[in-house]
Image (cartoon, rainbow, N blue to C red; front, top):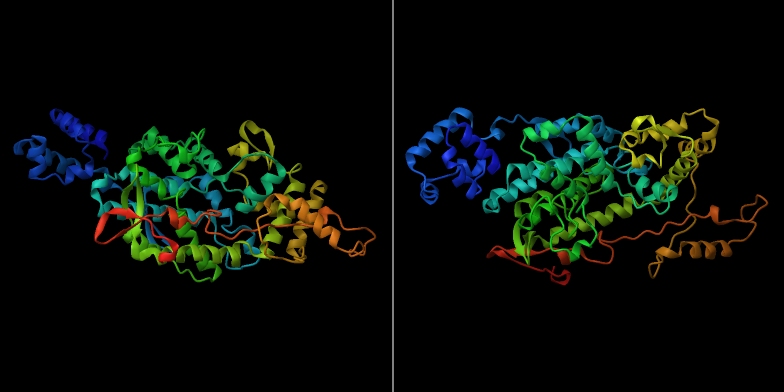
Length: 492
């Protein structure tokens, strides 16, 4: 219960004279259960009055959370996990079930046969870890005032953070959309917020959210956890506090699902463990140990999640795992080639493959991102929708996908390590390559042109480009649990 729930209970049980005392002290349901003689004296409450209140509590049950019956899920990574009934309500919707048909690793499945896992199970795993991390911190630091509603909001954000992914996941937002709609500033995180709002509205779940004590402010909080601050007129780093869902005193809550400061969050923990498991790659990072040693400490104006100094090596193992996954799987040259071919097929099919949106309006695949009714119909099945189509207008797209099925793929003719970044010079690099190739190399009566050469510029880093995310992380020692400090790479 939050303080308002406690006030409502006091009113129902005939103790309205105590409401102002409990409201002034911001007493929650968990605080109510832990009140002792010292607190009674502090609040100025007579024992006889408190005894009467205890009887009322025993008759009506202290907190709704005691009556919540969770559902048990068996996950191959995290084992048996309890799922909150509100999360189950979200899972049992068409918008969430769509994630069953979105491969977590997109085109990697055509290279790694074990990479058959989907965004569906990853989202459930992320929700589980989000709740687990926050509960672990609350247990060690009850003074932070972490409420059951805080925990539930973080769980829901973890559950819904990937609702906005399109077919073949990152291929769609990093490859297809920029090519189909140049200049369109679209991110799957914002689409996740749009899909979340559509999910709640379409399935009439707002009443269920209210039933478990979630307010409009909590709904805003969930959206901020997924996609960041709603008002980004000024950059995040220059704003004292850009969020509205929670105050700066609870800034650490924004570091759990999508950590903009260090990149260390439960989303990564789940996909590291899940991807390594399915790819057959060793995961050297132990997220369970991190959860047990995480601690909230005030750094400047904000409360940050900090970690024990002896865990610095474990953190570097996490980023090493990330780099290893990128090199061996996520940026595998054959997977990149296949995703390039799928992108080309989608671009050729875009004008001819329409999806019904709001009010029955038919939209192209590239337009569906603006209409969640249409976007909900996009999944990896679009690949087979084109492949098995007999529409003559889809012939070119179909031919490319047939080549993938026959393993008649584009060829990687070379790769090199560049001395400096040249992200904006792809046309120049392409021209250099074409000029260096003999004009008759194709042996088809024409010279090679720019459409024949595809260039991928790939960067391998710790996830924050030229910055070292460890420089943003703060550590503490066992001798001083309230002071955070920086642990430089050369000290590890």
